[in-house]
Length: 118
Image 1 (tube, rainbow, N blue to C red):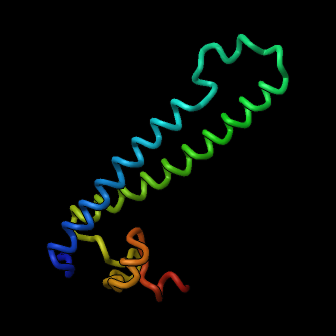
Image 2 (image 1 turned 45 degrees about the vertical axis):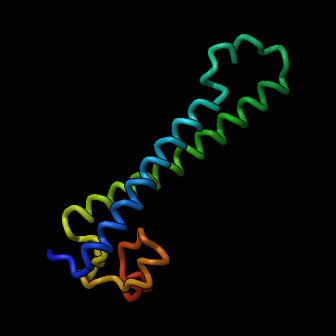
Image 3 (image 1 turned 90 degrees about the vertical axis):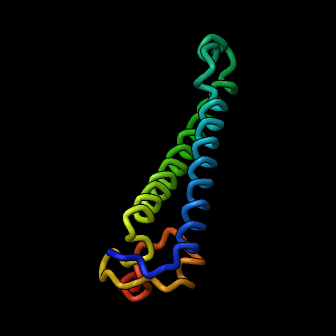
């Protein structure tokens, strides 16, 4: 499939998504480091039930944030693959070009407005 988008637009999109990928990977690392369950001493100081509850809540929040970022990272990787194979900007349902305004507002869009409305 030959992409109808100008090469400069695709190059800018690729640069943006590569930056986004690096940002997300860095954020995943930061979240992992902040998870209280990563601290080997967290299980040794279990005398304070309040501390245990706070650690559990922080751990659950960390896991939820990681899952959300991992999902976004998968979407970014998918887009980068589509840019490489020339299918970025085409609807996954009808194969028509997705309107540039739609891609500008949602660069991860995989469906044109008509197919997304169905």
